[in-house]
Amino acid sequence: MLRSILLKFSNSKALAHWVTSNGTTRRMSHRFVPGEVLDEAMGAAHACNDGGMLVTLDCLGENVSTPADAQKVRDTYLAIYDRLAQEKLKANVSCKLTQLGLDLSPEFCEGLVLSIAERAAAYESFLRIDMESSIYTQRTVELVKRVRAQNPCVGAVIQSYLYRSENDIHDLLSYGCRIRLCKGAYKESEEVAFAKKEDVDANFLKLMRILLVSGFYHGIATHDPRMIAGTIRFAAERKISKDDFEFQMLYGVRKDLQRQLVRDGYRLRIYIPYGQEWFPYFMRRLAERPANLAFFIRHFFRS
Ligand SMILES: Cc1cc2nc3c(=O)[nH]c(=O)nc-3n(C[C@H](O)[C@H](O)[C@H](O)COP(=O)(O)OP(=O)(O)OC[C@H]3O[C@@H](n4cnc5c(N)ncnc54)[C@H](O)[C@@H]3O)c2cc1C
Image 1: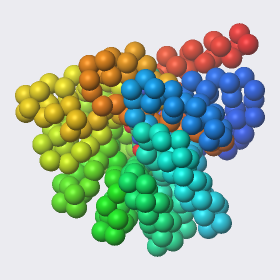
Image 2 (image 1 turned 180 degrees about the vertical axis):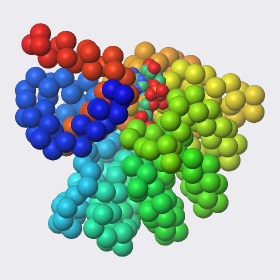
Image 3 (image 1 turned 90 degrees about the vertical axis):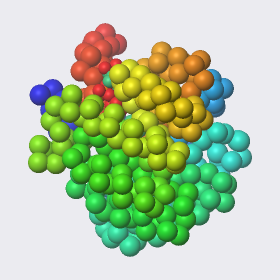
Image 4 (image 1 turned 135 degrees about the horizontal axis):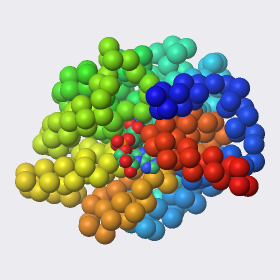
């Protein structure tokens, strides 16, 4: 119930304006978003690399309304790759298609993605296309396949809460696509997604097994100790090397588990978002764990 309300609020422009212009909430957002400018994200990325973790950088933003705005986002991503290369960071980039004009025109969006992928390839890096709500799933899968046909340094994300995900995985694997598996962060109806956590989790473990034996390098993105233990167990049973896949976690979430995985010799990539448009991302993080909301409310009224 609380999760649904928070996810609904994540689309409110009035609330976004209030929260993002308030000094206290801006400071509190730093737990999940290290800052609003690239320099702050780079500082966080260096700290992660120093701690033995890989990084993926995301410039926050969704649903642009003009081609010029989408082109600006494309330029931002090109500049991020340049900075990552200059500073020799072990990092790649994640972006969302609605930031790059998917709602305006799939062809226009594809052109922008292709130009970002070319920059990624020039640095022997990688571009991950995040997965948004289910109204975009089909278009995202199709676009990733088309871009990959021209430039294979692009990968996709699959959400275990969607019924369709097993089919999407087989489809994308037939194109040799690298996949990030996560549970899914949006508000979805029972027509398209499992409603019960136990079903989402069971599907996550099922899809993880398909990915790990596929022969391609994938990302298992979760903070759930049961999903992580299941992955470690399965990899050990099948003698899959720790170098043949990576775990992925969000900046600021379960740092204890992050350190443990690094200590145990697993590859771990931290997703570092930055930018002014942090409100929907921040609300999705609160929705995942109501205890975070209580923590933020307590701190808000204390400060
Ligand atoms: C690297 C990465 C990339 C992602 N990319 C996408 C994407 O492209 N599209 C998409 O829809 N979703 C994405 N997600 C979000 C994902 O779908 C989940 O919403 C999110 O990871 C929470 O699910 P969970 O697997 O951690 O398990 P959950 O069942 O939600 O949580 C399990 C446990 O993890 C801990 N935990 C989880 N979330 C939090 C939190 N916010 N604060 C504190 N503790 C927490 C708690 O201990 C909790 O009990 C991504 C997640 C990661 C890690």
